[in-house]
Amino acid sequence: MAKRAGLGRGLGALLGETAGEVRYDTPSAGTLLELRISDVKPNPDQPRRTFDEEELEELASSIRANGILQPIVVRPMDGSYQIIAGERRYQAACRAGLQTVPSVVRDVTDKEVLQLALIENLQRSDLNPLEAARGYKDLMEQHGLTQEELGQVLGKSRSSIANALRLLELPPEVQELVWDGSITAGHARAILSVPHNEDRIALAHKVVDEGLSVRQTEMLGSRVFVKTPQQPASKAARPQSFVQAAKTLRQKLSTKVVVRTVRGRNKIEIEFGDEAELDELVNKILGE
Image 1 (spheres, helix red, strand yellow):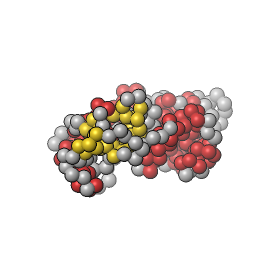
Image 2 (tube, one colour):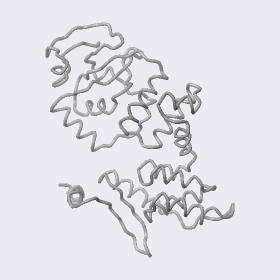
Image 3 (tube, rainbow, N blue to C red):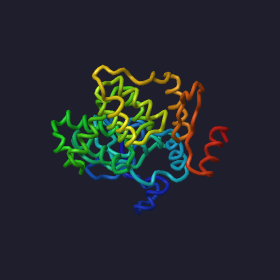
């Protein structure tokens, strides 16, 4: 059952509610409620599929100390409530051990749910390029939208939607590099100019191994890889263990990490900005 109450240690004061006040209501659109965590369900079509573990833990610690300062947005769904916006806060609240979560109830359609989730994440720049592309594709397929119509909904040009969707044409191995931040969407679009998937994979690994810029990738792709239809890849792909190790280290250290072989010697390269960031990396590596 939903209750309208003091909204945790912080939000209630901001909204002028009396701490501890409890009233039971039939929720209507726009109603602000304190919902039981067990009554709130994630949206299975949420475009954002991954959450940074360290950031979630930091947010959970903050919630334990201060409560949730901004309510999540939900809609009634099959006797419970489905999240429209605020899944990261919900996940952190679960980790923090909260029993209830402040929520705004809205009555929206399936189409509007995905639109709102996309807009929320895009406005916060939380979606990586592939998550955005998959969200666009889902909206278009589920609701029969054209690229231009989707652009109007999201406030984006048709060409930007088209460029995002092209990322889904990349082979899975290259999509993984975009997903974990090893290469940017700009690199990916340059790689797409190469006609064959085996060459796209080889070029993507060359970008990572040599730290190529987008412009260098474009030039290399047109000069080396676009020659004959059957030209083989210029070099063997890195071992899968190298790829997995780099991905694990990137997630742990929150910075770019490359594991590669240079002139017959295996190396791990960790990127940092300044001395303070270097000290932070050393502490993370040492577990301090």
